Length: 389
Image (cartoon, rainbow, N blue to C red; front, top):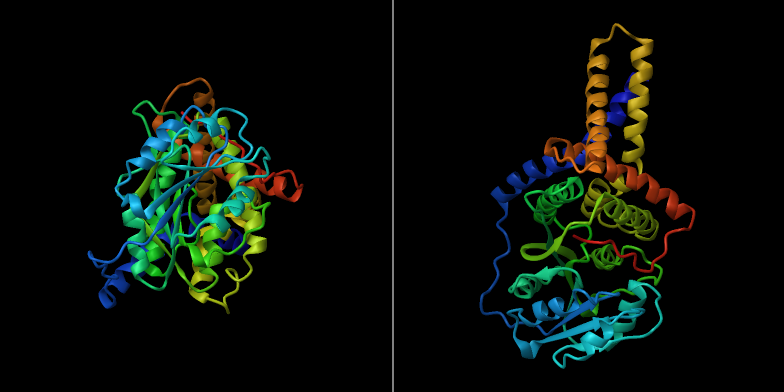
């Protein structure tokens, strides 16, 4: 029982902290023996299609169009395409008024992946850049992404997702902002070791000729598109100087909804990305994929519950073992802080020290709910917009 306790506790620690610590030291060592790829400043720029899937975004779509038109990439090499399938508001109408962008629209709502699949055959550019309608790119974002294709081993490039966090942010905003800062660091180190293991839909790109058809019922399309390219032996690069800025979820309820959907999609992707989980296919990719993604989406959230209950049993069975009393006390304090953070959040009382335990527990709770939702077949691939601040 005690051995099982420490094994489970180690897996939890490794999932959220240990893998990052390992990457930090292994990257330090790698830098001694191998220098980073040197990009040429005079390389020919590829043709690019900027693809934006927009569903009922009439409140923000004009700002998104303006942001796209202000990108520093050469206009003769950039085509901007909006897919507004299923939108029932004025999104398509607003896009259609602008002659500098192309509109693809059907009244059928079949999900984001179905809309993207419809657009892909119409694209003739060398590179596709995907971005969301509610995010805004820095002016040089595309330039920073495409430079990585000078390296023939790179098949996809992930940009950075940044969350705008106001000074008076609530727990969902502050927690999400902190989470993405940590994730960005891990992605940077993942790429330095070998490859990223996925991409965020807010901003990523692929070589057009490497696109692999993705099932139309795919829930996390961005992750699947990138990983199918990685399964072919190509690297998913990471570029923090290409970033997409968006506001946080409107509240905890909206953030929970978003996390549940991602968790359900994560479980779905694990069943479909069989090569990624096969160490005989690409052992380094498999190590990164399991360490950074699979553990978070599968056993670790459940182990958190199990370890807490097991700690109570050990404490009751061996009351003289002080170490387990201390560990139980620390666990209890952490979860009480999360509960207190939730209560204060509901009353709009902001104590930032409680934001991280609250968001951390909410994220893992969402993973458990997302797993149930996937296996019950209740998670649709159709867009579920989360309200943003």
